[in-house]
Length: 294
Image (cartoon, rainbow, N blue to C red; front, top):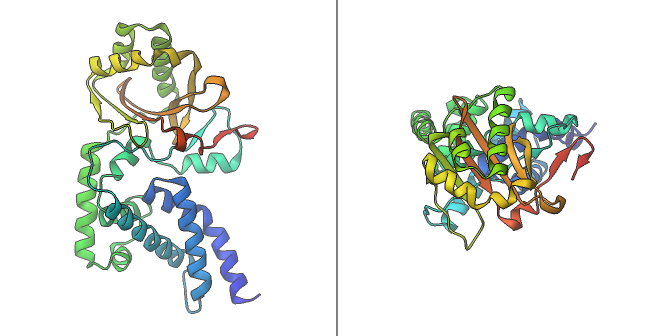
C-alpha cells in the first residue's frame, strides 16, 4: 500500500468528523463540504510522511482552511444587526437511515449556531475546537498563531458570549414534542391566547428571509405571538421534524420545503424560535426521511 493509499484511507475514516468540525466552524453545509474537499487537496499535495497522528493532523488542516474562510467572510461582510441563520440539518421524525442519524446526532442547536456567527474567527475556532472537540489549547494555539494563554482567553471570552446569547434547552425529546405539538395546535387554531400560553415571557424570535430582507430579533411573548399569527395561513402545511437534533417545525406547502424553524424549549415553553426562510438556501437543503433524501 502506497503512502497516498494510506492517507486516502485515513482521510475517509476521518471525513465525517472533519465535516462536523467544518460545519460547526462555518454554519454552512456547502462550505463545510468545500472545506473538507480543500483539506484533502492540501493533504494529498503535502503528504503525511512523518505524521504520527493522522486524525489530529487532518483536524489541524481543516481548521486552518475554516479559519481562512471565516476571515475572508468577515472581510466581505461588515458588522450587521441583521439575522443570519446558518444552514439547518433537518430530518423527518421517522428517519432510520444510519448516516442521517449520525449527522443529526453530531449537530448543535440552530440558536447556538446563530450565536457562533457573532464570534470573531479566532474566538469561534478556539471555542469550537476546545469545547466541542476537546483539543488542547497548545494545538489550537498553533492553528491560530497565538500563545496557549491567549488562546485560552479567546475560548473563555467566546464561552461567555455564547452563554449570554443562547439558552440551554430541554433535551428530552418527549417533553420537546409536547411543547411543539401545543405550538402547532395553537398556530392552526389562530388563537392569540393559546399561542401566548406556549411561549416563554422573554421568548426570542429570529427570522432569516435572505438578502434584501433585513430582519431583527423579536423579543417578548406578545410581540412573538402577534408575529406568529401573521403567518398562520401557513399553519395547515406545518409539521414537527428534527432540526439539528431537536424537535422543530418545517413548512411544506405543495410538498416543497418552504421554511425551517429550530425551537428551544425551556421549562415547558418555547424560549427561542429560529427560522430560515431564504428561498435560495432552502432550495438547497436536504430533508432526510426513512426512504432517503427528499
